[in-house]
Image 1 (cartoon, rainbow, N blue to C red):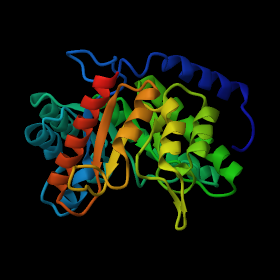
Image 2: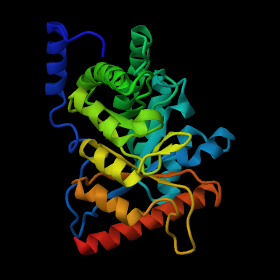
Image 3: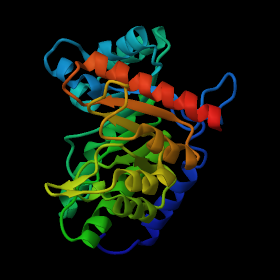
Image 4: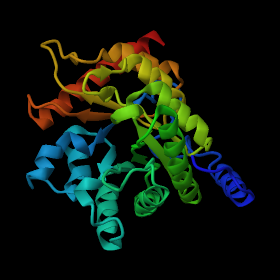
Length: 312
């Protein structure tokens, strides 16, 4: 991060930190208590990216997503992707209709995954500031919809340490803006150094704000073409900062187990960190189709939840 904190920046940061005390448990799709007879060990949400082929083909609209989540899968918490309503962040009429459809069907808006708004860790300070400001509208849209977070990327350039400083600077600026809106800014492991669990954990620690955290994704640990970070280690490193979790799935065997990730091992890591929030289905495979991929992931998560719940 270029330069050092001046008094104004310090006071702004302190105010943001104070404003977000209590974020988390009070939010709609975040931490939940330990499993009881009436309360499951964790609940299951649905990421809109699971239907990205259907959406891009124009066979489903973003407004239809929460309705489908409830009617077809009985899932009551959804995670949007801004790509599917990119021009609607400031459209109050549109957001009101989206919120109404959620309310009418008993669906909670959990978060908005934000892409295409610039690099929050850009090497150029002006580009970094623009990227931060480009995300403001999504913070405001998330607040309007009742979300607890926006998911962002920690894209950057430079050396390991330079990228850490730059990403932390951009995330801090955005988190300070988001704090008075009671919105978290959470980073997914999403390629490059952000898929290095130790690096991303250090970035979040450096930001040092309660409303800046992570969204550990089970599958996104490819740092480069020939470099893969251990997914179990990565999730374990990111869980202390997690405000949401993404259960990525690509393919299943005949017994209903995901072929790339041991869900029992991974969810034990998640639960051992004390997380009791929603775990989001994010189907990314090609075969079977999207709806069946979501169902397979949902069934596996339910089976894992039941077994680990009996052991707890």
